[in-house]
Image (cartoon, rainbow, N blue to C red; front, side):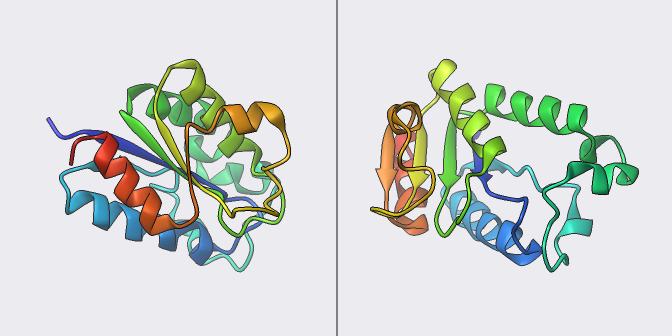
Length: 155
């Protein structure tokens, strides 16, 4: 059975491209190393073309269960629970990604390794002591995060 990684990172407030492109790149690279991935954007391709994904989830509830708060929370929590490691991309974010922070906290509570790609300074996630402590592996690029997840998962 292939190890399983979860691709956490910003969605709300980003363009559809910015929310999906890095995940597709990471998924391809990890798949080449025998690592399957779970993507919180799966089955949400309607958002891929958005110029800006709304920060109000209610704007998308009419698309179905996985666009509603309970569906988002249940699926993403289950994904973190069943994955072997998280790849968390905070690069370039200008405001905190609250859902991503919840996923990082779940990983910490479940003792799942998380590799977080984040700028060396200036990222809005960087100043809180609890977030700082919830980041076991901190790297400065997506490529380094992908490589680190592969090492952690023995691939």
